[in-house]
Structure formats: structure tokens, C-alpha cells
Image (cartoon, rainbow, N blue to C red):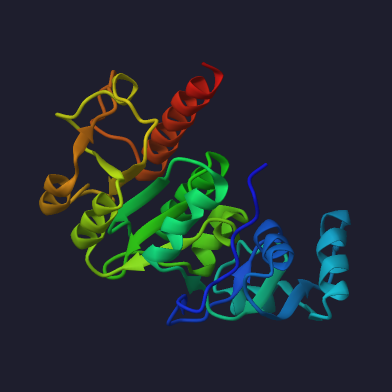
Length: 265
């Protein structure tokens, strides 16, 4: 089990757009983490089952307002029909600074392990990456501020609670951010479709930031050139690439495998 997410620092900036959070696991994890203020939880008025008992108990202990709505009302609040009968009205998501992220590995006595996403625009991909990041011990995620998905309700739903556990920094200039990481002794490894080294033939045990590109275009050329190394996953089929969230999962687990092996020797 990974340690709980560090509490937001004064430097953290809230998201510009406060959006509802929906889905049983994301809302329950939000309540447990205390990372954002929950103003109200709306629950489906009919068909409440045991899956909601924990959520309702935690909400009542924290004094959160609970209301009961029809399915259509919940869909209107969430802006999405896949809300699982639970929608929370929450304060806007908070982003960490790069400085915040850099303090986390030292506090855990671990080599830095970060992920950076270059203009990933699908919130479901962002959510899936957050989920892989959380279970593999990533210390923080870096996303671009423009032309990219943020910590929206859809991203949190796909993350299944990981959005409340993995700190996220939103940076305007990813190339500049990678240079800052290098100054702190962090090696940057960009994922490209072809031309890079196979990841299990690289040493990924040291201070590391994996850099993955957005849907369709992949890493922008300048971002790729800014990386210390490039890596490519071997493809045996007829498709030329993986979805960014799938590639992130494979690469994160390779880092975890190498680091676990190093701990045993």
C-alpha cells in the first residue's frame, strides 16, 4: 500500500473550472483523503445497495450534506450518464508545483520517479495513467497546461480514486520543466514509437521521469529532443503504437520490476 497523498501546500493552485466528481470509488477516496472540500453528495434515490454504505457512513461522519436525486437529475449534475448513482459537488481540483513534487521522494527515502504527459487530451487516458502511476509508486505526474486534459470529473472517474492520491503539477512549458528536473539530477526518458532503446535493456532504477506523448502525435519533436534518452516498446503485431495509458502502464511496471529486483540484491 502506498502512503497517503501529501497535504496541499500553499503554492498549490486550484483548477480554473470546478466540476462535479462522480462514481462510487472516486467520491469515497476523495472523502477519505480530505484533499478537497466536499460541499454535497447527491445519491440515487432508488436502488441504494451495500456498495454505498461505506460512502454514506464516511460522509455522515464528516458532516457532508447528502441529498437524494433521480437518475436524470444525477446525469444532469455530472454531465455524464455513467455516474454509478453518486455525484459530489466539490471545490476545484488543486495542482501541486514542481517544487512540491521534488520534495516527495526524499521524504519517502526513494529515488525520484515521475511521469510527464505531453498534451494528452483525453481525460479518460489521463485517469488511466493516474491509476497506473498510483499502483506503481510514481511520486508525481506532470501535465501541460494548454491543449491537455486536466483534473476533471471524467478524469477522476477513470482514475478510480488515484486522482486524490497522486500529486499533479500543471506546467506551461514542458521543455523548461524537463530542464529543471535535469538540474535536480533526474534523468528524462521519452517514449517514442520507433528508434528508442528497449526499456528492459535500460537502467531505470535511478532518479527518473518518463515522458509520454499525446494521442495521435506522440511527443512533440522539441520535447523528444529535450529528453536524455528515448525508449520504444517492441511491437510484434501490425499496429504501430499503444494507447498512451497502456504504454504508461507497461513502462511504469518495468520501472517497478527493476527497482524491486535491485532491492533484493
